[in-house]
Length: 214
Image (cartoon, rainbow, N blue to C red; front, side, top):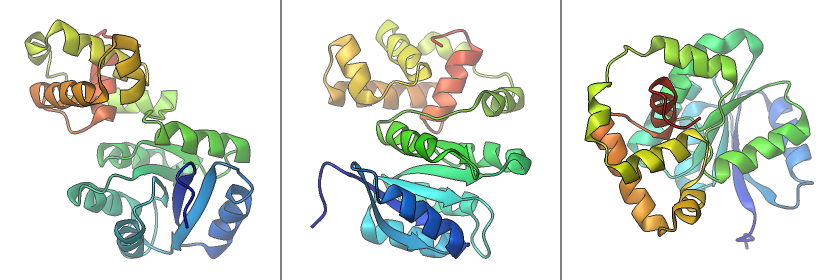
């Protein structure tokens, strides 16, 4: 029986050696449990729907359905898992589409094991894990629109948006603003709708671009 206090992780990578290495390390973490593995995007989506993990550690380049398409499929299925993309230094051009497809962040394949564990905990807590160069890449690809849409936000929504840009989870925003998590979720939904954005990652970047929050 699964421990409700542990973060349930699904590994999706087409290299068995990589999966074995990740599993070996993560198994010694007291608060992380590897609940399954998949060798490609299609299997990863199926396993994510079956196992309902908290976090999916997803490779980008895989045969058949790649990581980005798997991300889009999970998003279309409203799967609640937070996806942490695994990439290499030479794949930066694939990271931006992955984040736009709904990834909660990314790590490099040669990431320090302890940093990987911290990244898993971070995205599980609701944070968006963005390296500076990826944030800049995303900002540079924005079309510059949306300035006028910001005027439709209420003062409370701007406060919530600033905290999203600061990497806060809904729970942390609720504590900071003395609100219920349900109310925060409603504010986040309204922000995304008003700004015509797909997810918290885009909201955080929009806020940075327009001088709100971090």
